[in-house]
Image 1 (cartoon, protein in one colour):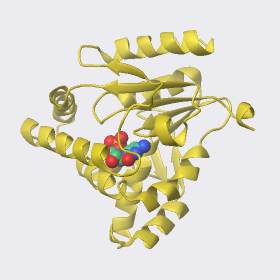
Image 2: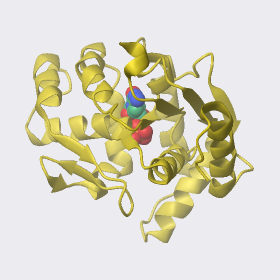
Image 3: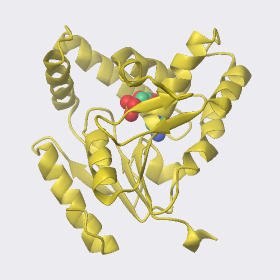
Image 4: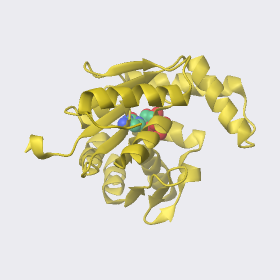
Length: 229
Ligand code: C5P
């Protein structure tokens, strides 16, 4: 029954808005479970490619996505395990995001991943990070956040992150990748990127990650009566 299900807090928005950082921070603070739904699409795209499955072979792709064994840990940077193997570095590459966005446009694949995502809803609660967490996967979430930032700001953030990691990238190509991915994610027919009607919209352009965390924690405290700070 719906009222016996553990609570969910959803965090949606385009890439580079700080969703992942906020989601991981809240999951750690509350000691709740964590779903990185983007990683599921990334892993599907990478795993299928490694298995020689083309992105147009929809039935094989869905069978692969249904069978893969994925777990997320909130320890350290937030590790991702596929069939028990640590694959976080590969999953987080820019090109994996672009591949994910291709397979994510397939309605059959989204349907194949729907129940898997809902299975992450376990006591004491779940923080779900993605694009359609509040609109499609957990429409009954206790609280929904939707993070935004201009494409230029998001490209800048990503640029700094990658340069700090010693990765050589151009700001211009990052910006055009972000714009292409936004376009594909917002215009697709199924579950396009958009805020849920009851989402709290947080414009993060002029906020630090700490400020976003504080703001979200305050809203969680007010809405659910739990202390996330
Ligand atoms: O959030 P992340 O950058 O890891 O997502 C990678 C891609 O996966 C997105 O660009 C989007 O196309 C897709 N995605 C999605 N629905 C989600 C999460 C991610 O379509 N809930």
